[in-house]
Length: 163
Image (cartoon, rainbow, N blue to C red; front, side):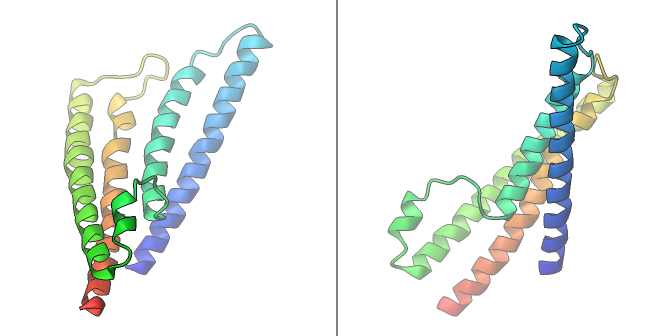
């Protein structure tokens, strides 16, 4: 499991770095072409928007995997004095997170992607299928579920040690 997690971490981090680099170049070219050349680029606005979607969703999956996602931890902090209850709460939170990622992102996002591909919707400037843009939703959901499963395995192992 750790080997798979390490591979996912490396792939996602390199992917996010690459997308962010292309995003910065795209926005820089848009600003340069608009204000210096007085001839704005027609594709950079659209590609920047699509890259921002992908960076945001893939970055969210990566951040979840690093356990650095923003969280309201008022209740877990109240339960720190009881490791068993804290562990149980963490398991429940992870189950709800997995359900959300699976139902909303993988199932719902996958359906959105497939319906968009079936309709043949393409982007106006780049001419790419919008289903490829929407593919970021189920893909990031898949990564999130995989990270959550890893966390659940760790929590259940820790729970058995606490018993």
